[in-house]
Length: 529
Ligand SMILES: NC(=O)c1ccc[n+]([C@@H]2O[C@H](COP(=O)([O-])OP(=O)(O)OC[C@H]3O[C@@H](n4cnc5c(N)ncnc54)[C@H](O)[C@@H]3O)[C@@H](O)[C@H]2O)c1
Ligand SMILES: O=C(O)[C@H](O)COP(=O)(O)O
Image (cartoon, rainbow, N blue to C red; front, side, top):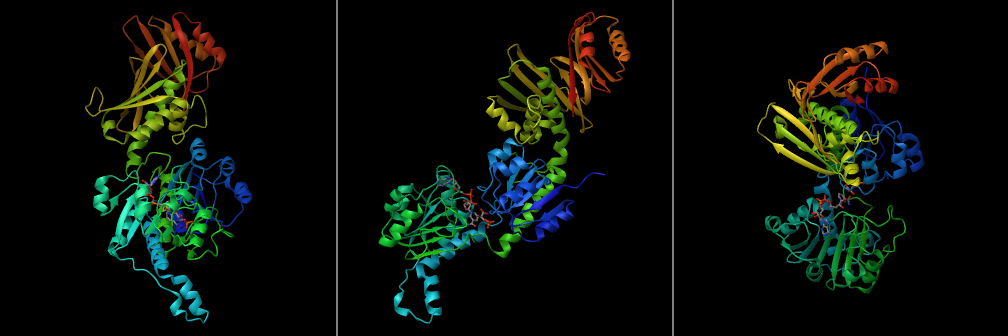
């Protein structure tokens, strides 16, 4: 009986998430509000972790997460997850990039109106019995210029809504193409131009080294007198002390923050500043968005844990649930070929090439490449998997080349893995029999036909009569049962290779005796998953 994958939901999430996990065959625990120490003590037993922004998945949490395979963020921002540490550990990190975008964009628009008409303060003072009709004078948004910093999913929705209320929109986003800007109906500008022209500025970028403090004191001072600023993206994009000073001086006529540099924000310098309004990171908090992200994250995590489907992963190529069953045998073949080359190559390898031919060339190549690298690098570290293999390859300076030939060769489908070594280029190739059974069909230029599984012996010898008998006798005398014999040779009497599958590991002493047999050039024990 196979055990069910175990998932922990560690942040408040719509109850549909837990239902989906159960319906998809996972065991699920919902335990929220724990301290980091409690999470560290618990995380070891889980295969999957579903979070929002409260759970901090640090290096320490990951180090304790011995069984963890996947982290799913029910939302967009993943700055609470140490992605490099997760990748190094082979843990897939996924998010739900669209589920809460409309909701968050609407929050930004709500903030624009709240600032324009000072609604929170007018509300508080009215309810306090003041009836302060003469204390407030708002501004219209019609005809005003909105400066959008970041024009991705949320930024573009904000732009469309702002255009709907007759604002002009200028956008600063280095990755925004002129064509997309035209499609969005916005004017693409440089940051300085935006700062100079905008009556309202909204931020919609992730927090990166390039965006951190993008509204620094220096940049805030470049803004138009009377500008109003909204941040529903990430704390850390704005210098909060400088913003407070400019609210006090009146240069900034209003600021609305949903996010803070330090959260939960309990004592921000901005609290109490004039024309400052805030919400406690509520951008994604609508019923609709929370149902969306909870359903998506549960589907994605369960799909990965149960079927191997990869959607919206930030550290691994995507693999749809439809593709996964088709690609599964290819990934097995790719991993075996990578492993074969890794086990048989002693020299340092600066370059590895993966070439797909025929039917294989029509498929998504990224997962096959990741599988080859995982197989190849596993000889160096047994913690390598498809997630961390591409990172390790990069870290170790291994150049990875990908080639596709859609035309069929001798086989209807083929994967070839070649490595560049000090002694030249060496390659192995494999196909799928009946589209599902991986077979090695070429080994360093010699045609063979072998299933790569379990314990194996690789022998290079001079093709001469009597050799098979001698090796059979040697193994028999040492109690090693041979499963399959696979022979290949360059030409009669030339170099031959023998791939034997054996029922148990071959001891070093037997390998040495085999090596001493007449005509034997090389003997190596191999192992395949
Ligand atoms: N307040 C909330 O509850 C809430 C909810 C959802 C998302 N968010 C946050 O909103 C932000 C935007 O989310 P999204 O889904 O639109 O992301 P996205 O990836 O679709 O868009 C981000 C945009 O920022 C741009 N960008 C990157 N670097 C930039 C730079 N240096 N200068 C200008 N632009 C730059 C990118 O090109 C991209 O277009 C994220 O930080 C996300 O975490 C907050
Ligand atoms: O990045 C996000 O999706 C938002 O910041 C939402 O965060 P939350 O799930 O904690 O509300």
